[in-house]
Amino acid sequence: MKKILISTILIMVTSFFLVGQNSFTLDKSATKIEGSSNVHDWVSDATKVSASADLLIENNELVSIQSLKVTFPAKGILSTKGSIMDSKTWTALKADAYPNITYELQKVNSITKVGIYSKLNTTGKLTIAGVSKIVNIDVKAYVITNGNIQFLGEKAMQMTDFKIDPPTALFGTMTTGNDIKIKIDVTMKQTASGYSTMK
Image (cartoon, rainbow, N blue to C red; front, side):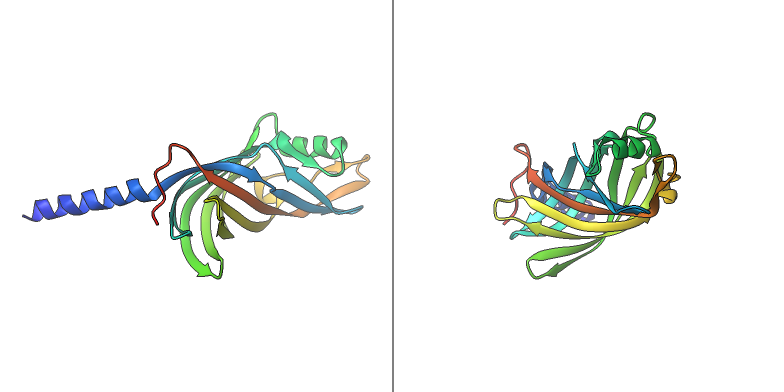
């Protein structure tokens, strides 16, 4: 009898995740990297972003995240200051040796409903220039009317955390600051092969 009960519980739990979890991929991204220099502040766009996730949404509210991974090429980082800045950035990021920057969620520490969005405290592995660090990021998640979900957040860090030497230009007369901020703006859509969202 005990074995039957355990088996029944396992089947119920498995069925919950099969029905509730949905596969999502990137719909659009406006993720940026902000920094400073001794001459001017700068902003770079993270282009060519790809992302995938397994999410549970109920009643237009994010309930849980089983997995989330974001990848973008180092040479997809494009500055508003032009190609010279881009080239210096790619060199600093060792883009030829480590072409991709990746983030992989490891744990959602908490999800709190705040008005029209859910506030998440997350832990994940961020890899830049071949160096991986465990980082905590606070994120807002908005479930949009069309079923898409938007994640907004930001993370301050230092280039030297990832063994990156801040880029210089003009024979060293322009030096960038060590402090940078990644501003996350990613919208994801449910894939056609995903399971139906629970209501």
